[in-house]
Length: 115
Length: 114
Image 1: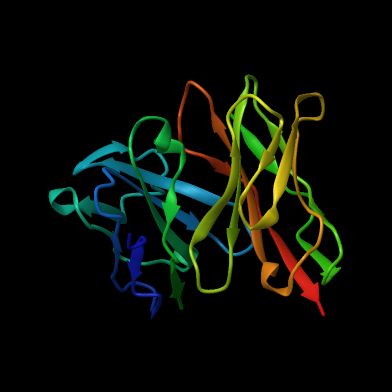
Image 2: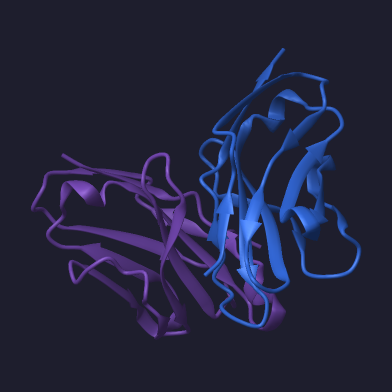
């Protein structure tokens, strides 16, 4: 099966601009997650979708971040306006249900640099 | 809330040498424990996981990890490292019976010398 894909792989934007990251989960995975890793630190949870619904968005840092999952398929994460501290690697992951919730498949990440 | 400590930011080993990456966790109940690996340009790949049962867990690529409740540790081991094992390794803990969102450590970068 195809893995989790993310686009773009890299993005460099200026402070104040808008960026949209995309994630395509593994087909049939109802659960989709976004994570972020700031350089040298832990991978931090941002939010979790079950199909098209937000199950948990407790990790979203502020209202400059907006995540959507259209029709329960791919997801986008928009940062508007971007700030310097938003730089990092954004990972997307997906999983099945039940105990398989714990087995998350990760994409390669999008490296975001805000200058 | 759970937490994970990976005390080594970088580890350098020679190809063919044995490897042990340390992971300590903090969680009040029985944890679910994971090791992930991220090779350059790739996503995180699950190496192995512990939910219950045998405390010595076998994973992919010849890795194993041992859950030691008394030491709150879940160290990753490999008897003979290959150059292709050079990557970043992340330990993570999940809350059994609670949130399935794992808490990650900061990662350990493994450098393999020929």
